[in-house]
Image (cartoon, rainbow over all chains, first blue to last red; front, side, top):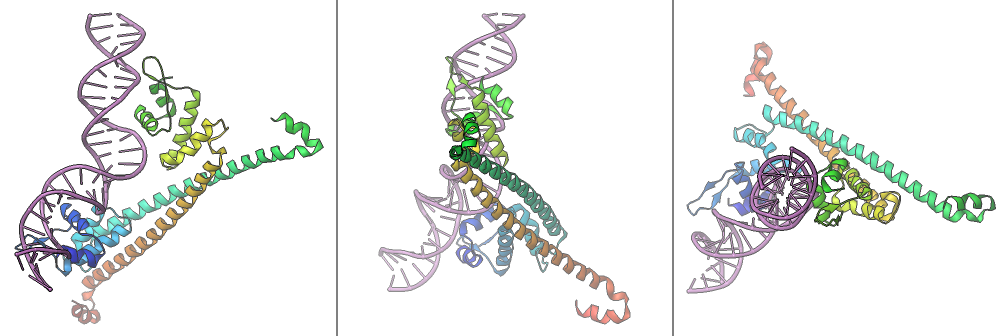
Amino acid sequence: MRIGELAERAGTTTRALRYYESRGLLPARRGGNGYRAYDEDDLRLLRQIRVLQDFGFELEETRPFVECLRAGHPAGDSCPASLEVYRAKLAELDAMVARLSEVREQVAAQLVQAEAARDALAAVDEEPRCELARGQGEETR
Amino acid sequence: MRIGELAERAGTTTRALRYYESRGLLPARRGGNGYRAYDEDDLRLLRQIRVLQDFGFELEETRPFVECLRAGHPAGDSCPASLEVYRAKLAELDAMVARLSEVREQVAAQLVQAEAARDALAAVDEEPRCELARGQGEETR
DNA sequence: GGTGGCGTTGACGCCGAGGTGAAGGTCTAG
DNA sequence: CTAGACCTTCACCTCGGCGTCAACGCCACC
């Protein structure tokens, strides 16, 4: 299998495959013409990389999984090093969710406050029809 | 006030200030010697930028707030454009939290499954002491 | 008048995961 | 024989928000 076919079957691009190779993640044998030659095992490794990438793992974080597969294990996450990456990623995801949630609440609070301030100003502009409020309304200008 | 003092008072760097100016976000007047000259209003603008940056807003997203302040409004979020940015950011944050939470659950599930598979293999390796289990244990190899 | 500490512009570096394009080699079908 | 579909390497571009020089100007103090 050549690079174009592998890329298509894994739903990625030839450029990505060459990049993975440059990172030492997915080395390729070469045919007599210099073309890269891949087999079904390479497809499995590549699919493992893609799944983790879709999860947001960095390329380096997929390395233990790839090496685990290459060592002959049935799954990329059969090795302790892969489990450690899972655990680290879980902690990282939890931290990110916590941080983003906190920011979300602060932004929401800012929005509520800013809208209240806007409405208060609008009320002051429209209020002066009322005889009692007029005096105070003018004073706040 | 010169650039170094402003940077220090806002807890940032001179490099950041020159960058903001290059983006047209925080233009500076110049003294006779070519030095940038800032006043207290600039400090307010800068603080607004910093707060939003700490929230994870992109520089471009802080622009409406800065222009709002420069237009003389009491707060950076007194203008409709700023409120729109708040709302867009809230939606963005919600989407990110949702996506990350989903990924978190998938990774957690993968971890649980991988640990179970590992434990199952370990059990097979240690089990054969039991007479009844030995026959089955050997077969699974 | 020299030294140190500010300021100035400009240009390149960084991070990750490739995209894009040039210039060329190879293979295959018509 | 030639078109075009594939492959090769090399090298620069992208995005955001600056960091880090380099080489120079300006100003105060001793």
